[in-house]
Image (cartoon, rainbow, N blue to C red; front, side, top):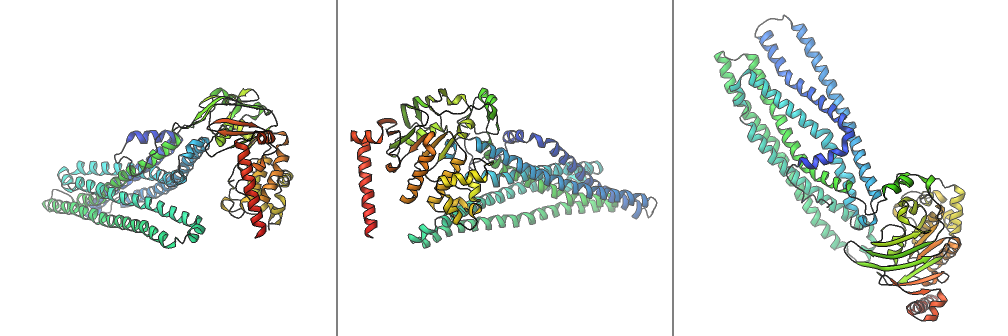
Length: 610
């Protein structure tokens, strides 16, 4: 489904969009109906109060009699208490539904995000996704639990007022209500302008937030490039736009209420003039006259409320479209129903049916193209025996990472098969496969929390002994224990409290604790120092000794002991063999290795001199 932009979203109220959205909220149907019922009760009491006032005036004041006043007082008191309790119950129930609605919608959205494939994230910005799960959800839960019910209150109240007024005096009703049609359209106009201004404010606020985030995360770059003045000037442009939009919204808001009050006063003035003459002429009672004035004054509140809610619905419609676009986006990779029935899905694994992975892997006539039509692999074939370490070497864009991404089923072949232990991996579940793969990235991501939290991220039930063993295996235990709180030390946002090498070691420990049958190392040592690389290399040799593994290599010194080294060029294997065999061939790998070796020796000599 196409992504919805707030500025391009339709300005007309589309019932179809809301119908599609409400199908995800069926479990709240009874609660929303109960809320509407409460609001009908509130509106009913609001409509009755002027009738009680008329009765009191005509019978006790004009009639100069106190007969029945005690009964009237009791009835009046009971109605007031009923209204207070009704409103209290409504506020509690509406707040509860708003909270549960937000929770439910966020759950739906987050669950879908967990199911979506890598390709979705390749084309989605973090800011766009964050806005869906925060501001859009808040806006929708508020408009549904409060706004729609306020519409019920406004409609019931308007119909009740007009019905009672017409029943008592048609002519006076028409005179009193003559300003309602223009008031409604004026209200819609102003609400549209106000919401348009606030929409602009929200968009600019998002931009300012992004500016803050970029400036904070890129502070070092800003300082080194002396960009302070340019950054400030760019920030001022967005801040000035936001200020102007905020002022515009405030001006429209300030004008709207006086106009409503003025129009209401005109209607009330007509009612006073005609009603007063009718009272003097004796054709209208004092009580009925006061009742009409009360209805006329109160009538403009629901009219204004209705206009505002309709405008808010139009504004929230963009949020509904965007939430729907997220929830209804189908993953590119999805297990078949028979596979789910046997192995379970991401949220309900049937691990009792999972087979152990031996480790034989075969790429059989594999073709792969991205959605934009870019061909990456063409008739790619490869057989790997259990326990072998396969190193992939090649230029950027040659297809190395694509091969391991296909193996991990982050993407699926356009055609051809990938066999694990002789069986197409699509015959088993996505969760089964990825639970058996330890994936270490070039730039490891650590989550906010402690070192321990990050190591057990893939295996929450891991014991302290398992954590320590994995850390010692990758030579991370020593630096961890030097920290003030050891394994309970905070890593900071994104692992900001640790060096790149330390984060990489923790990433290795995390993969080892999960005890996978297969390992994938995607340029895992390309961004770390030589000393840390040696530590990791020792860890790799220990961990991978009896497991099938794929290593995408940048530093060739890390793969000299691999069982097979494959040079990938334009999606095909152009060279293959052990390190010694490829050196003897004196081809691409030989040139790459010797050049890299010379460069490393040159760097070492410069370091020694300095």
